[in-house]
Length: 82
View 1 (tube, rainbow, N blue to C red):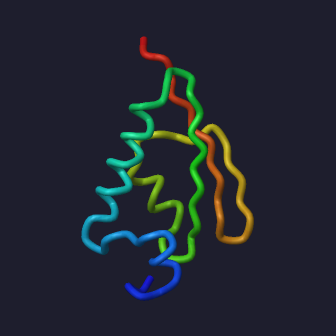
View 2 (view 1 turned 60 degrees about the vertical axis):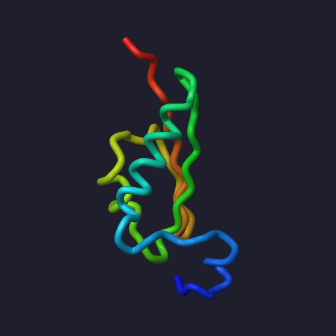
């Protein structure tokens, strides 16, 4: 995404050098603040980064998901602590 593109202006953009760490830390924070058995709905578009790359850098498995064109919707649940 270019710096001046409408997409970057509307949604922001990932940093080329830190995006993996940014996504990993952001996902960790989302899961941290969820209550036990809380649900996280995760939307990802594969136009530039494949979902498989995202799933490699997060430590959680989705319960299930759905795909339409290049857009994926995944459902994650925070498990109760033992």
